[in-house]
Amino acid sequence: MIAHKYDTVTGAWIPGEEIIVGENEKLPPFYTTKPVPVPNWKPKFINGGWVETAEEEEKNPIPQPPKPTLEEQLEEEKAKTRRLEVQLNQTNADLQGFMDYFFATQLQ
Image: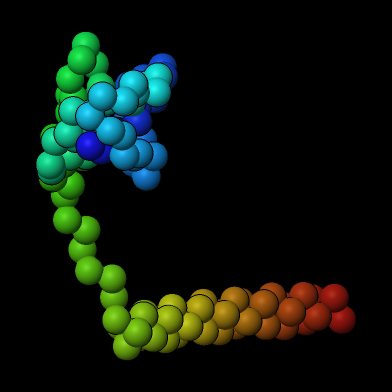
């Protein structure tokens, strides 16, 4: 017979801690031979039975959009680079205009 371990405080199932016990063998503390329900998300052993405690959002999560492909990531990086180049060119033009004005007014 398989015995399932549960947390001493919360009653949460501890997967991977199962043990095999004989029919008349005494169970260690915080073990039960009641089968864990399938499917399960967050089962807890409460009042002598397994109770599912997962919220609906945990059971049926909203699907995430697919990650962009490497080609799409590359195109996005190229677009960012182009935007930064435009910004840099504008900053350089503004600085050149300021320098031209500054030196023209300072040399008079």
